[in-house]
Amino acid sequence: MTTELKKTTEIFKNDKIIADDWAYIAEDDALPAEGKFIFSLERFLSEEQKLKQTKLSLGVVLRAGEKAEKLADHLEALELIAVDFPSFADGRGFSAARILRDGLRYGGEIRAVGPFILDQIGFMLRVGINSFALDNPRLRADLESGNLNEVTAYTQPVFARKEAPAGTRPWARRPI
Image (cartoon, rainbow, N blue to C red; front, top):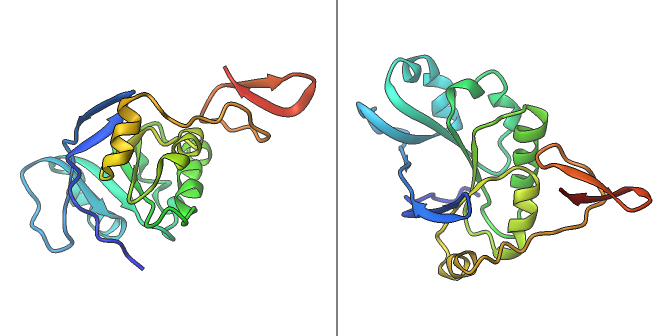
């Protein structure tokens, strides 16, 4: 099932709500002269050389089920990777984000898009997602009030965040 992604007007990034200056470009849209555009994975991969010759800032949306590993040799061209969460019950975006951040060492912006909920944000931060499309008014209100629903104790280490052992059990982790 493919969700239709729409232009987000605001995002949450660096602990602030800011205007979104990125736009999605459809498969059959002509390339604009300049701007910040998010392409489908398929279009980006098929037109990458042409896109690199433009003045565009490039982003890609990874839809649920698409392999993050397909971007391994293309990450230097991308300023943003939007990871689609087509429903709050679909966790494939967590795996994609962790592969991008920890496995492929992508240092750019990883944005969560789709109908995710506040309960997921702490885990999204943990796997390296660092911006969030704000399509849900309730989510916006929670983030404005500083509620990130962060998880402060872990049992598995990740590379996306600095952590230290918590107490005498080496498998227990805490953020530092």
